[in-house]
Length: 407
Image 1 (cartoon, rainbow, N blue to C red):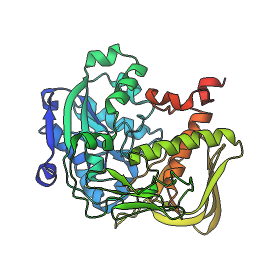
Image 2 (image 1 turned 120 degrees about the vertical axis):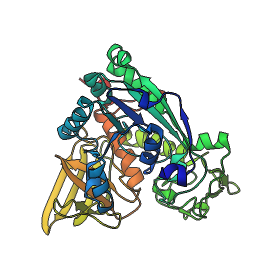
Image 3 (image 1 turned 135 degrees about the vertical axis):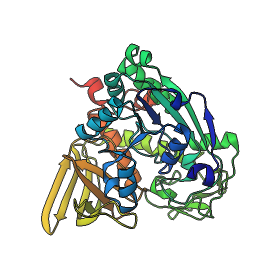
């Protein structure tokens, strides 16, 4: 197993998936792009069928191996009958389907709420659900830097819902249980564990992709992460970070406890800003990319560039205006159909599906972190189908929230 050979993980098997002699699900909290290797190790010797992003099947390095292993393609955050049909076929044959209910790997070391409809699917199929709980994988392979950093990782396998549990519990109860079980702050965990990581001298590389706002002067996009430090070009505020992922602020600096806390502070600011300004908008120049049905992608690409223009987020949705295949082109996606963004590989660009068609958006500047928070919080203001965690409800005390308050 590549995991045992390369990463030396600590597996904790409380309930063996191989002891289940019928169909089942295995879900996991998605921390990094290499989590799937851990799931293979934790479910061994049982064979499983994984769900993976639809666009991944167009990448040459995955195409053949995905087909050989009968991986099920899924268009993230989009209705996908083909994916559900694939899941149904596997379960009817007594198989095991593995997937990450969050829909994508962690952006900044915490978990996202699970995709709405996850537990509804469990209620439909009425089979046991196992949980593989991962720890340390984000620190091993962050979304801002694709280096694989060796330290200590864990994978704990246990039965989450028996068949009786699935039939007895409500959809909301199951959603709440999964979100609570997935609750994660990788930086806080590492502070307790005191694990030292081999970070190749690049522990702060591109940290500004998500930590984009200076906590001292409040300027945006003035932070720069490089080597073992992150610093504001406007006021000099900054810190170094050691191989335990702990910040050491400069003298008189204002630095949050961790990148996780940094981003959550930015979220609080956005929640306030968009409610105070009904004309709020944010935009950046960008390129767009699409898939080609007849061509595979090489060199870690996820699409072919087909146009350029501006991407804009405002109270009515996300808008693109520019070109596509040499012709004028624009699109709008409202928040009923957009509630978070996909960062398929790293934080330099994002992805979404528009009426089932895959698009990459490559912003000119390092704005993906802000756009992602904006989309989530605009959705919560206007629709709120993709709710924040119950333990974060205090962020909205006294504030308007989508379908919670609107008829």
